[in-house]
Amino acid sequence: MIKRRLGRTNLMVSIIGFGAIKLPQVDLETSTKVLNRALDLGMNFIDTARSYGDSEEKIGFALSGRRDEFYLSTKTHALTYDDAVKDIERSLKSLRTDYIDIYMCHNPNHPSKFEKVMSPNGPLKALKEAKSKGIIGHIGFSCHRYHETMEKGIRSGEFDVIMIAYNLLNDELLDERILSLAKEMDVGVIAMKPLAGGFLAAPPAALANKSKIPINAETALRFILSNDAIATAIPGMMRVEEVEENARIGENFLSMSEEEKRMLMEVAGSLGKEFCRGCGYCQPCPQGILIPIILRHLTYYKYYDMREWAKGRYRMVEVKADSCLKCGQCVEKCPYNLNIPEMLAEAHHLLSQ
Image (cartoon, rainbow, N blue to C red; front, side, top):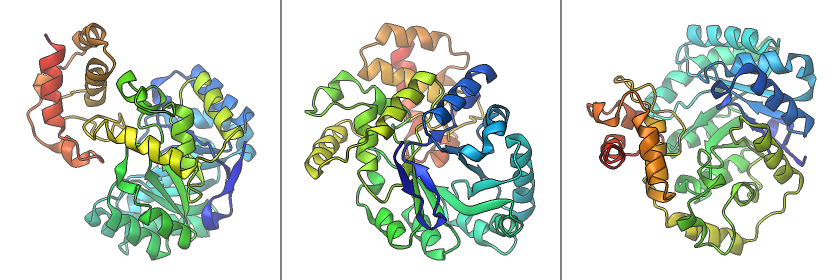
């Protein structure tokens, strides 16, 4: 597996890392097989978060005996010192380790959240104390869409690592400004959502057939890693087959030419922005609507010509999309600024016929 330096952390990380956000969707036996296969194939960077269900627990169970073989990253949503201290303690216990290589503030995207992180009694204080005690190695933060927050975080000098959503369908960072700044400041960059929630691994024929270059997991990851500001990309994985496919890409990586990248971006841009990436940040819904699942069915209906299948799956959903009260909470939390209530209304109209 090819490795790159993760900014001033000086950690040499595999260019394909393991995103553990999907582990709560599989049982303990499966997650153990998947994680061990990832290490066997040279993935030496694993990322999780306190908010990823039982992901930390599954990593701890599966890999505590192989702790010296990989770098570990997790995150806290805490916005106070006390809550961050508790989260660090919980992470250490759940992960069955006495040391975490990178601990991040989890998506303090809005300026008001970022101010709380940086405040005298904010979570950054707890992370710096943990670092001074040798409990964590490096401090980072993840962020969606808010360039102002990203820039402040990079320029602050407090963070060694930034995690950003970066993929063919995410136009927010294609101007490269933030990536160039991170490179200049020697802040390590981790690319999350590299396959747009799995969408780019198997795009609809209407999209894929427009491209002279096949759009799949390999080309999507090659596109990201062709930018040398990116140290590692962390697709979410929950099957051994996914691990093996992604590992091959990391072993046989070839950088894309500017012309190849231009062609891919042109085709990807034709899809538009109004589709759900399945990140789950909109959850939980006060009405109990499983928004990512319903919008995934909508995607299959509209783009994959799987109308009857999607309608059948929608019938199995307990809380239908018409339960939406348009409270707007999901819109505020969506990192892609999607009009989710409108999309849910469309989903119910099409899938309940």
